[in-house]
Length: 243
Image (cartoon, rainbow, N blue to C red):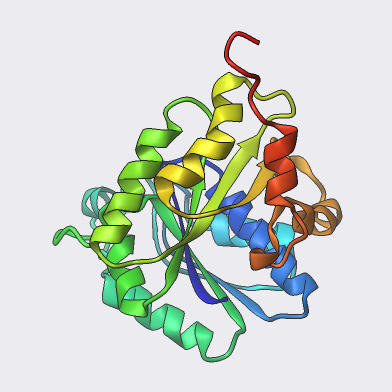
């Protein structure tokens, strides 16, 4: 997989758990893994951030954080309010490339969605992905409203000639409603990339051992897992209209 940029259709969609799952599945294959969190926002100095949470759940990864801002805002805004330096896409790309030179897999987890601004010039995670020529893995919620956000993200990627590796549902309920069932089919279609996994709800509450053991079951073989997209779609196919 080399370098994979992980973004979401928005905030709080399960990016960190998806990153941890991909990291765990990669480690289970005997690969060395680095996790890069370019900008951590909303976490005080000395508190564990997203990269540390990935390491806690997934296992022995190299966890790197480039910048930290205390307020839970977009990186550019958080940096401006705190008086701390911003982070440019060239710095992100350079850090990821250095990690890729000594690791089999580098997972770059963004903040919020694809076009969240990192500096006063309006630079985004997409700019770093383009510099790296890296594929993007999109994490999305399965419910109502995800199709529009997914389509907009896919359009932004396509306009920048960035490839989308696939989509992961960041939090899948055991009793999905009609919209969630329909989106199993519809979201990959509007994004133009395959569904590569579905994480159950509340996986963050699992013990690290349980998380690592289960992670391959949530991800498709392209991400080092055993999850079967066709079987998942068949299991959650929506009922016929009026049925």
